[in-house]
Length: 114
Image 1 (cartoon, one colour):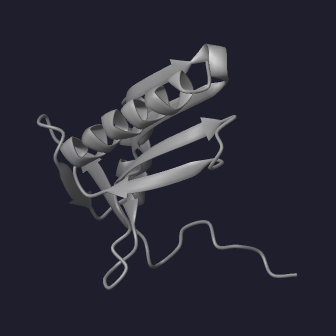
Image 2: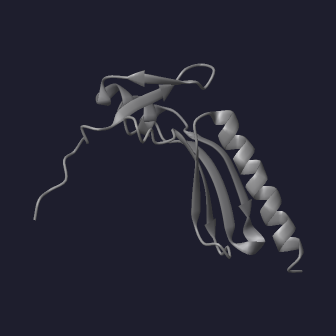
């Protein structure tokens, strides 16, 4: 059984500047420290009555081209008909827009269940 490397060589690491724009850093230690010291969760919406949560956060890790893994992710988890799903975005604005779209879609679907 082979062990997994501690730091994938393919990964690119990012932190956010004062305007929440991703900035690539070359030092994984700097990235890890920044991630530990900063709140990377930008929005969380709990629909407690339905056991659903939507979260939007900064990942800070991306694969190199051609994949370019999105740096922001919006996730829907809980008792949802489609199951737990993740949606990547390249910018915070795109991720927050997706968060709102998913929330509105869920609210409409849940209103139809009542």
